[in-house]
Length: 146
Image 1 (cartoon, rainbow, N blue to C red):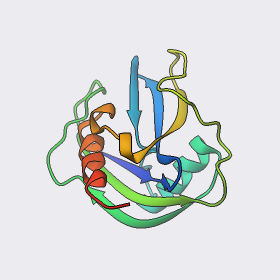
Image 2: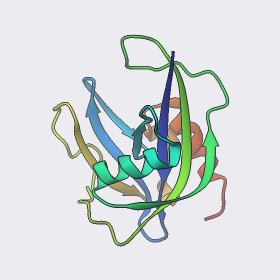
Image 3: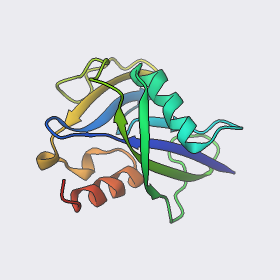
């Protein structure tokens, strides 16, 4: 069984990297915006759909950044599956139309709660991300001059 997730990397030159704080499956999590690939959908179309649903805003999907190249089992789902995560750089089609939180987890512990915030690149800590693949991607991004 495979689970394919598609994520977007958006870095604002002033505010920093966009992340989402969510409460799902009885767990608070910090991750990149994005979500699950649906049957019949391409990876870029998935990211556009997820951003429209979550951010309420269209995005332009730019270049591919990373695809999981090691075995990673899903962490929170009852049935184990191999996770494949695909990351693209993206940009917003205009100024953010979504509310931006000022602190981590400004959401209630209700299934599906979500907020967005920016992390300044100079204070980006990969360990702030909940999932191992996101942590790896954050470490990769820290090595790139922005």
